Length: 82
Image 1 (cartoon, one colour):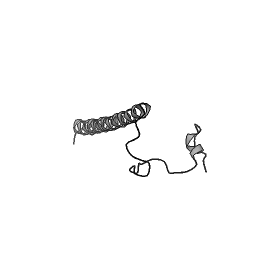
Image 2 (cartoon, rainbow, N blue to C red):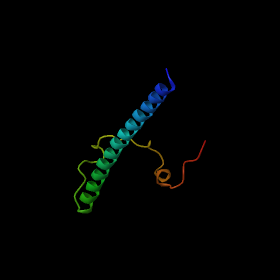
Image 3 (cartoon, helix red, strand yellow):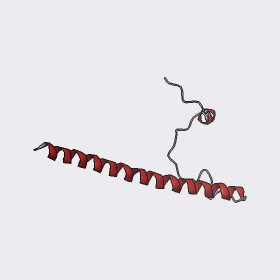
Image 4 (cartoon, rainbow, N blue to C red):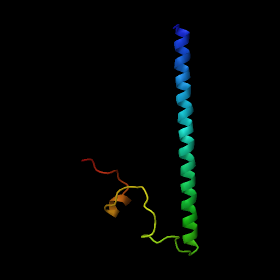
């Protein structure tokens, strides 16, 4: 292969990687906007005095930090290293 062929392969790989990265950012942005809309809707409904749609025991499990000390989760300091 000539150096020109290698340059074409390299640029093609980088271009494909950038397209995949931008597509991934777009998906993450859309998911964040959906979550933000759901949170705004819940806050508006609660502010208007409407009860939340599901009781805590009926709510589906959500991914997040493991249960622990509530004060530790509210802290603005980074977690201590072990």
